[in-house]
Image 1 (tube, rainbow, N blue to C red):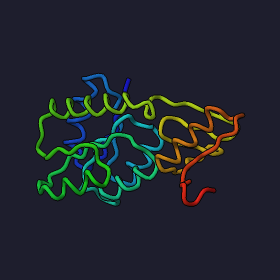
Image 2: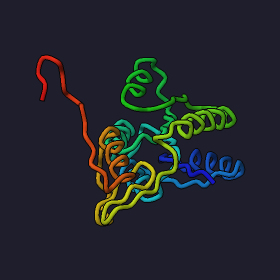
Image 3: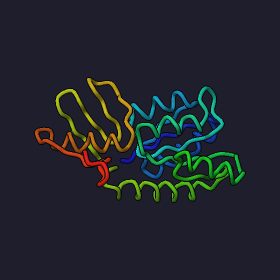
Image 4: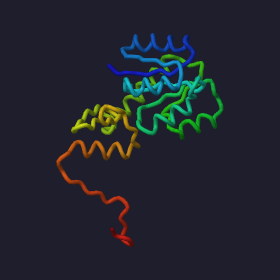
Length: 182
C-alpha cells in the first residue's frame, strides 16, 4: 500500500482528503504544520506529499526547500494562491505539481496516480533497502548510526552505488577535461 503525507493546517480539508484517499487504498499520514510535516516525512517515508503553502511554524516554500535537500519524493502543492508566477516559482523550487483550491478530489487522485507512476518508473526512486555496517539507505533517506543524514540527489545516487558494491573500488571521471587532466 502506498503512503501519502498530507501537510495541511485546515482540519476539514485534511480530513476530506484523508478519507477520500483511504477509500482509494492509500495509507495516509497528516501533519498540521511544516515542522511536523518534515518530521513526519522523515519518519514514515511517504511515496508522495500533498502540501499546503500557508502553514504555521514553517511555510510550504520552506518545507519544499528542506525536502529537496535530501529527497525527490513527489510533492503536489494544493494552495489558494492563483497567480501564475507563484506556481512557476514553486515548480522551480521543487514542487512536482500544483492544484488551486478549491479542487476536485478525483482530479487530485489522477494527479497522485500520475506522479506516483512517474516516480516508480524511475529506477533511482524504486524501493531501495541497502545496508553496510552502520550506513543504511531506505528509499530516498540515508542513515548513519541510525540518524538521518541529508544528501543531495547526486550524493545519494553515489552512496547507493557504493552500498550496492561495498567491496569494489570505484573510480570517477567527474571534472576531468582534455586541457587539464588529473
